[in-house]
Image 1 (cartoon, one colour):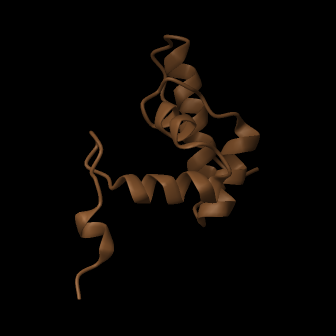
Image 2 (image 1 turned 90 degrees about the horizontal axis):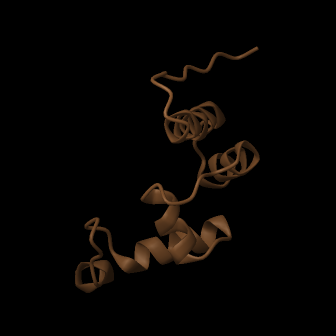
Amino acid sequence: MLDDSVDAPVNDAGTSDAIVSDDARTLGISRSHLCDIEHGRKSVSLERAVRFAEVLGYSRDQFVRLALQAMVEEAGLPLKVKIQAA
């Protein structure tokens, strides 16, 4: 039997809308908010980056680095963020 997501509508990024909805629900945010984050229209605070990493089972360092990098780019600074544990 085929996975139900095979027939699910696909958004512009090529991701099933059902998957996006599930991810947003898991993170406790709306689909539109998640879409805005993915497309760089909204930033993620460091605290929220840590929470997202924990909820999704990813490295906190990775999510904090991504949030900081987005802030640096938003400020127009030609810098690359690296994270090192204290």
